[in-house]
Amino acid sequence: RPDDLPLHLLEAEVKLDGKKWTIHKYDADPFPSNPHAHNYAENLKLHLGNGLLYFGKERKSSCGTMNKKELVKLRDLVQQRNATIVLPDLTV
Image (cartoon, rainbow, N blue to C red; front, side, top):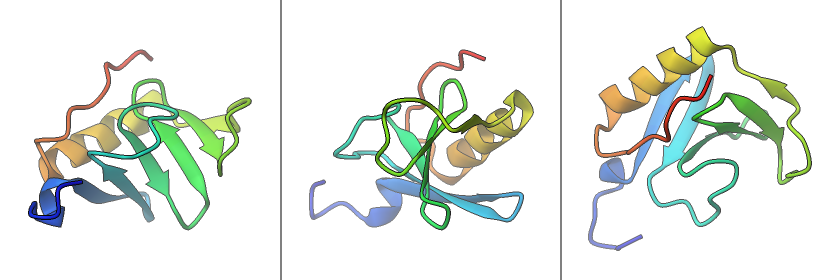
C-alpha cells in the first residue's frame, strides 16, 4: 500500500453479530476473493461474493458458509464504513 494514504481509506473494520471482520482494500493475498474479509479472532477468511468461509491459510475446501442475509448485511456495513472498497459480485 502507498505509505502516504491514510489507513481508513485502505480498509474497513465492521462488527456483525459480535464478530469483527477486517477488509483490506489492497490485500497481498487475493484468496478467496479480492477483497475478502478476515476474522482474525477465529482465524477465518470470508469470500465476499459467495459467503464461503476458509480456515487460516487453507485453500483446499471451505469450512462453512455465511448465510445470504448475513453476507448482504456485512457487505452493506463494509460499504457504509468505506465506500472506496469495491466488493466482488454477489453470487449467492
